[in-house]
Image (tube, rainbow, N blue to C red):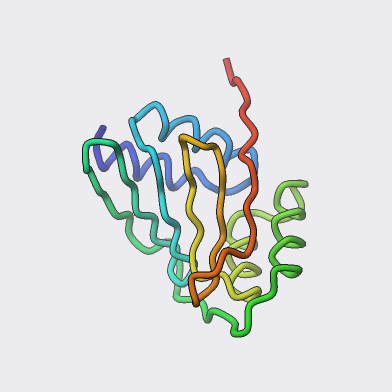
Amino acid sequence: MTEHQLYTAHHTLKTFAGFLRYTEEIKELGITRCEFIVNDGTMVYYDTQGFRARSGDMYQPLMIADPSSAAKLERAVFLHMAGQLDFPALCRLAAGAGVENWVIDINRMLCIYYDQAGAKMLTEPIMQFSYA
């Protein structure tokens, strides 16, 4: 696994379908967990061997709302999964809902969203597809 491979996978994130392909790609690269920082779009990758890589910022910094709103987050995630929001729009709405970061747990196939206090706001299963 190389940082270039992670960078390439990270920059394909535009739609929910892209997210599903992305999770498959990074799993094949040996990644077990990633943390997405909503403020600037940075992704931190982890594998079982202790490898840690950090992507560059994806966009200009976003203001994270306080207090957080799980209801606003659930709506944004629903719209994204329905194909009505691209990834940048999801990030903006997540920031507006007070999301500090989310963790993609590749082993458990879960996406877990956290607010600025570190409280869990939402846990969503990641659907698995085969693109063969």
